[in-house]
Image (cartoon, rainbow, N blue to C red; front, side, top):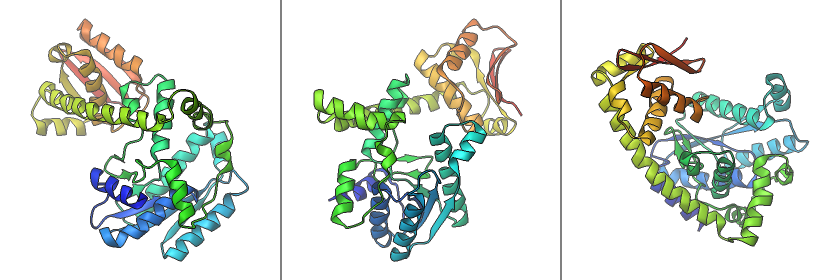
Amino acid sequence: MLKEQVINTIKKYNLIEKGDSIVIGVSGGPDSICLLHIINELKQELNFKIYVAHVNHMIRKEADEETDYVRNFCKNLGIECYIKRIDVIKIANNLKRGTEETGRKIRYEFFNEVLEKTNSNKIATAHNNNDKVETIIMNILRGSGTSGLKGIEPIRDEKFIRPLINIEREEIENYCINNNLNPKIDKSNNENIYTRNKIRNIVIPYVKKEFNPNIIKTINRLSEVVNEENEYLNKITKQTFNEIYIGARNACSQQKEDGQIILDLKKFNKLELVIKRRLIIYTINELMHTTEGIEKINIDDIIKMCSKNIGNKYLMPTKKIKILLKKGKIFFIAVN
């Protein structure tokens, strides 16, 4: 049953195609072991290759045991396994970053490293439906806009895939039991130190008991509606970008290479507020290939500056990008 659900998810979102090479991030926990077991069974049927990438964060005493488990699991299945052992706490302290954030960054850097080494084209992670709902709740608590209600998407950047995204955690755990997979359990998931753990262990069980026993499915339905509407708005935003971009499309490509994109200020000011906001994010991403560091206050400041229509004014929402008004044009300029 669960295997069929995964196949349906793969087909629905076109996650895996014939000839793909996929790096699977495997921690040794129920989610990633379930993912690896199912994907391994599908590789001949769907004609693709798989490799495993495992990171030992050196945080818990059980970490080495988990690494040995993943190594042996892969050996028994005849899967090539790449392992990285790194002191995440030490690196986090040196960089003055959170342990969770640092660990995630290191994992994805290693996944990409294995991707290049194996000449693969996709990275599969074991995010499930509960993870998605937890992320949505976290985003709501942080004051996210509608984009935060999307949660974790099935596929991102045509590279990162989540075949278990429509599967609930309980189903995954039952699959592991029924197939005698004996995954390793990360006991730190029961410690309510991190926000996600508090949502998982306190908030969701409370809501299930007191308000809605089907809260996971309810929030998931909300996410699906938001995704559909977001896709439509993204389509409108892209069309609008093409309409107010100054110059031909080939010129646009050249402008990007030169480190700037130019938009028509007058046309921009006539747009609805919701499209203005999305257009700014879209343009910055087109130029910088990221919107990291860009917050709602930055976007609102850019819109306010544009509405005043005063030439030679500029803002720098981050050190890497400059927004300049000049002669009825908006210049989005990458700063070296």
